Each structure stands twice: as structure tokens, then as C-alpha cells.
Length: 469
Image (cartoon, rainbow, N blue to C red; front, side, top):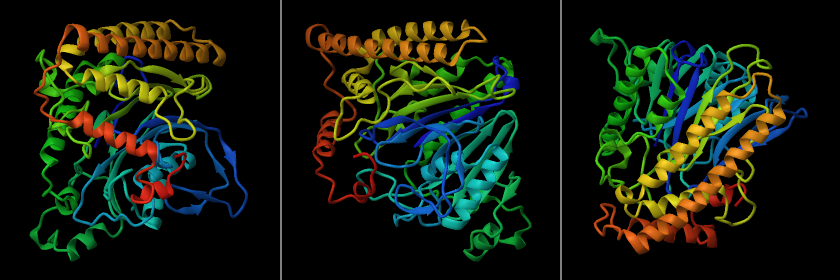
């Protein structure tokens, strides 16, 4: 489960085309920020993705992306040329396979390594898809798989790409667009894979004699899954929010952050709790260990001129954005210290510090979240002011110093909030016992400890293919 959206630069107050994503994963799938330099590769070199090797290209571009701890690919990222991509899971009538292959996240990272523009990105990604397909277990602990949709963006706009097996359809983006966990391109596509219509016709999903245009979503989408209405509601909420923002034509970063933090109609009640139907929320909170929660968020402000004059700026948040602040990371500033995946089996890092704090608050979100949110809001306001007053000719070293300073402040805030929440829950506010998720926190904690101990290493397939654990 995820949400990705794009707003063209002409609608943004900054003038920069902006790609935003909440990456939703299973509760114990920690997600880490990683930076890679450009590299040259020898003829015949191979690249090892999550499950399989494929031929490497002669040169790969520098990039930064967010990666679930056990896989090679990215949930979202940006490369040195200002190409940004986010992906979503979608479910098709074409059976998804857990056989080792390329994950959608692998396709995303491979494209960032190999393409400079959104048009190139579309060609690279669809070329890889048509050659290798997409398959493999998409969970760290469970046998499951899905197909993928993507927003591929550069400063000029980009593409909404939706896939089913090796088939795909794409619509050019101009203005704004959003994708979620349902197919949303029907007959309004600009490009389509060569065999998609014939395949759908042979399967009985499309009748050319009916006299209607081919509708990719109607032909390929699996509409039988119980959680899809929640996904549809989430996409509709994102679309209505973006449409309202676009009417203003001066969309601020704060507006983008607010949409990523949205709990939809549940934003207002003071006693709101993370619900069992969390799949309907843009800022997602899981209701069971096998459900999804927001594990990381990214907002990418893409360059609007020559790259050396206007480097991209990422705003990144760990875990749920409703209980954290966004930290700026420039193309040339380096990522915050400690945000990378630690070596060995450990849950002591920036991501787990934030996630652990949030789980304490989720014991009674309505009573315990207000003070932490006020602290993070104040920190984020200070962060935005610092970035907006940074000199236009600031050096990479100055930008890096600001990134590291703001990340340290967030780490300190997290530590203080964690201690405050424990004190409140033990001495001041008794958390309500009627959690709609039942014993969810106890179950995800047991699963987390099993991962740390390695109990799953001989069972689920991804541990055999995992990197770094």
C-alpha cells in the first residue's frame, strides 16, 4: 500500500515540479535512506537485484532512495539528473507470481540508475518489464506478490505508468496526478504495450466488436479483493485534495506535507485511534501485522534549471509523517548521519527510534499524540525557515551542515517525546484499553523480535535473498 502524487512546477509556489510519496510497508519492514555514487562498470558485468542478476549497463547514475531493509530496490528515489520515481502495488487478473524475478522496487531503482529524463525513464522501465517481467515475494515474512504502477517525474512533468505482468499503459502528466493501489488509467492513455489489447481480448476481458474504446483498468484490474474500496477512497481523497490545491496555483510545501499526513475524515476527532481499516488513510496505520503502515515519506523538489544551478531538494521523513518532521537533503549535501541501515541484526537506528516512539503513542493516539505533534510542527517550521533563508550561493558543505543539524534536532525530539510519552502513560494518562486493533502492538513486537533473532531465516524466501540482514 502506498500513495504517490505529482504537482507541476507552474502550480507550486517554489516553481519546482514536486513528487511526493508515502511508502506503506508491513509494520516491521524498516526502511532506510541510501545514497549511491555514479559508477562505471566493466563489459559483461552483472547487477544483483533482490532475487536475480541481470546485465549491468556501462555507467550508472548517482542516486538517493529509500529501501526496505531486506530488498535491493527502492520504494522511491531521485537520481543526479533530477529524475524521481515512486511506485504502488496494484492487483490484476493476470496472476502475480512469487517466483524469483524483478520486483517493482527493483525496476524503480534500475530506472534511476539508467535514465536522465521522464521520457527516458518510461522507455527504460517498460523495456526492462517487457524483457524480464515482474515477480517475486514482496513481503519480508509472507508469501505474497503484486503488480506495480509508477509515477516517473522530471522538472517538466512525467508519466503515470500502470502495469500488469509484462503489459503496461501510460498517460502523460501535465498539471497534477496521483496513483494509489488500484488501476486508474482506463481509455485515457497515451501509450500502451504492443500486446496488451490482444492479450485482454484473448482472455475475454475485452470485446472489440462492442464498439467501445479499450479500457486498461476495466480489462486488467482484479476488482474482487476486499480492501480495494479503501484504496479507491484513498485515491479519491488524494485527487480531491490535489484538485483543490491546484485551484490556488500557489501550492506550498506545507500543503504537500499536510496531504501526506492526512487521516482523511478522521483528522478532526480528538479521540481518533489508528483504525482497523487503515488502508483507507493516506497516512496509514496498520490494523494487523500483515497490513500496511507508512514506513517512510519523501517530497522531491525537482530542479527547474541547469542542475548545477538548481540541485534537487528532498524532504524525507521516517516512519509515519503524522508523528515526525521532514528533514531536507540536497543532491550534494549527503544524507543524515545514522539514517542508513545498520550492519548486523539491530533495531537501534534512526528509523527504529522513530518507530518505537510512535508505537508508544499509538497505545492511545488521541490522548498522547497532541504534544508530540506540536513539538514536531515547531521543529518543522524552524526547518522550513532555515532552508528558505539559506543563501542561494550556499556551498555543499553549508547545506550538509544544515541537514545534519536538523536531523540531530529531530533525533533529540524523538528521544524526549519517547520519554515524555512513557511518563504520561504511566503517571498521568491511563491509555484506553479498547484499542480497535486488539493486541496488535503485542503481536508486531513479537514478530519484530523473531526477525532480530532470525527465526524466519529458514522459512520465508526473502531472507535467503536479503541484503544486509
